[in-house]
Amino acid sequence: MSGIRDGLPIAPGSGIWRLSHLLLHVRDLERSVAFYERLLGLSVREHGALAGGRPYVSMAQGIGLTAATDAETASFDHIALRCPGGIDGVRRLLDASGIDHEAPRRTPYGLSIYFRDPDGHRVECHDSTGFGGDGAEGDGRGG
Image 1 (tube, helix red, strand yellow):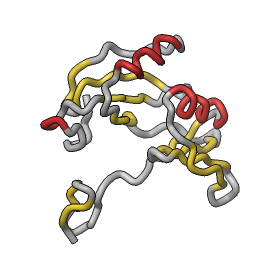
Image 2 (cartoon, helix red, strand yellow):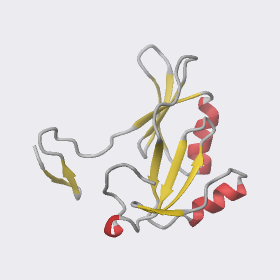
Image 3 (cartoon, one colour):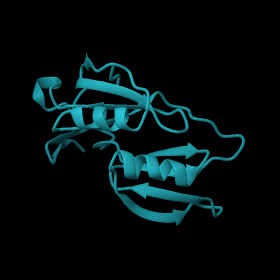
């Protein structure tokens, strides 16, 4: 299957359209929900339990959070969140909250700012000035 859905290409053969979600193992579920919901403004879609009963929280923007077991660690490079209105608001929130961040820099996705969540996961927020102004395409390397 190939084609376009909602302006995004569907990969021929596999039918993959876009990222569905990213599930993060976190040390403190409540602290992480507060970070993503209260600080970054993401919306909680659902509280539930994974197979085996481990609690999880699903954010409407595609990030899932679940309590890590002692054996689990983070195993990815970063999460990228698109900010069509620019990254100034995120930078102000980070500064006001005392959260360290890298200086904004140009990446293939646009103007990006990087910081860490409470569990040390690297988070990128970028505007929409990359890739011809839509900031939504690329090879996933970010910056």
